[in-house]
Image (cartoon, rainbow, N blue to C red; front, side, top):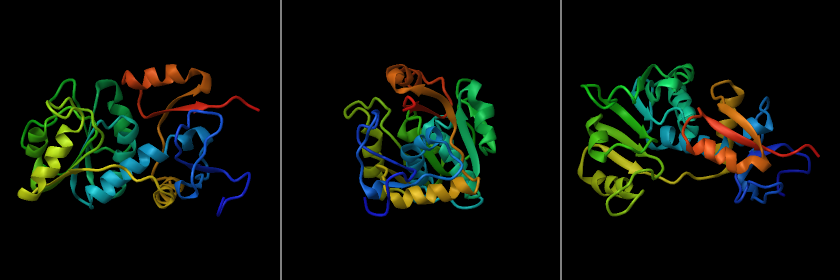
Amino acid sequence: MAGFAPGDEVYGTAVAAFAEYAATRPDRIAPKPAGLSFEQAATVPVSALTALQAVRDRAMVRPGQQVLITGAAGGVGTFAVQIAHSLGARVTAVASTAKLDAVRALGADRVVDYTRDDFLAGRRRYDAVVDIAGNRTLRDLRRALTPQGRLVITGGETNGRWLGGTDRQLRAQLLSPFVGQHLGTFIASEHADGLRDLTALIETGTLTPVLAAVHPLTETATAVRHLLDGRITGKLALTLPAP
């Protein structure tokens, strides 16, 4: 494999990676960040690449901006909070009661418990909204933006009337050219350049994976159920038995 040798410690993405062996391409892996275990490193590529591209490249977050991140305690959200904070933004993070302290520790300047408060109520307006939770309407999210604010929708979690999980994304893209706000979504690109950017953030202490638990590969179904029930903060990892 070009640029790599047997025994090199790498991390990245692959198709069907819940397995003892996985095949990938050289442009989808990079050297594993120093100081991370393989379990920690495994939680980074997909979620952190999504967060990096959402916050830095799509929301174009800059120092001093007010940024709202929904779903802040999840896999993408925990990385997004840290990245927005590292860019000098004032971060408002939305999570459930039990996860507020964990999110605050990641660098959020303000936390909102969505089970008790409507995080879109009031007069506060944001320069950027990164919507990961996916449970508020496009109209609601637009009201939370400044007149030239940027909305980035990640994932397809809503129950759109006609198009299911892609309803808000498509409407946001269709509306964006006709309003002052920039409304959009994206599909994260999995590539080595982004992984190297993440490695730099990790090795300087700017970005830290939040690893909630590690399960053996034989307990994959259990791990996925725990992930879907929404009770964990951050990510889960699978590990292989020792050779």
